[in-house]
Length: 325
Picture: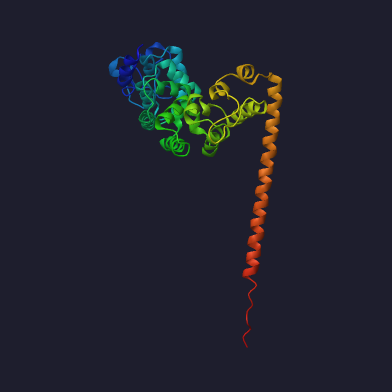
């Protein structure tokens, strides 16, 4: 069933009834009923179930939206377990976004928390992503790939966007590309996010356009550092000088990051998996030792501050008092 038809039927069915007119005399629970709701029989209408408005999503409505019977049962079960109070409005927002029933089911399987959202909040977040430059097609693919983005408030999205523009100096268009290709960045710690940019910019000598092209923010900082340092210690990568020049030709960032580990080793690092495995362990140990050293230095600094404060207090209390006779 096409998206246009789904939208029309959604608007017609979601807000009208929570149950369908099914004869009770058949002797079994009707497929189109809403579980957990008592069905009142209207004797003046030949023993049929009365229509009663509600905010629960019925199996009948799901079938009318284009879900198969199996999909409808799974969706209904998920909605029931979530106890969401606004499931119909959430479904309305997703269908109006242009997602088909199969895509919606996959989204709910990946992120059941979406059932518990308010439709108005979800629509506000979708509209905000559109304002940030995510066009039709890209927006749907991003939400299908990373449905958690629908759980993030607008304030959080704005915080990450502001950091990328003001601290990392990405253009508005580049920020849009980053969010489209690496939506996980929205949940990353802001300090870690900025440090990852600084590592690529200062340590590796990579500029913003190349970072966006290589999808820098998809990789954890530890993997970025490990791949870079492995090349550096093998003499295959060099940090550019102030003029941006190197004595060797560095591989492109996308060739370092946007490939599988196997291709990275065979085509870029020219090394075996065993060598890289040993190096990864050494890097992890180095980072652990560095972390302990930093913690020790921090403790020493705190002790020095305490000593200075103690001496100052002692100095303040050494003034003599003249006894009065």
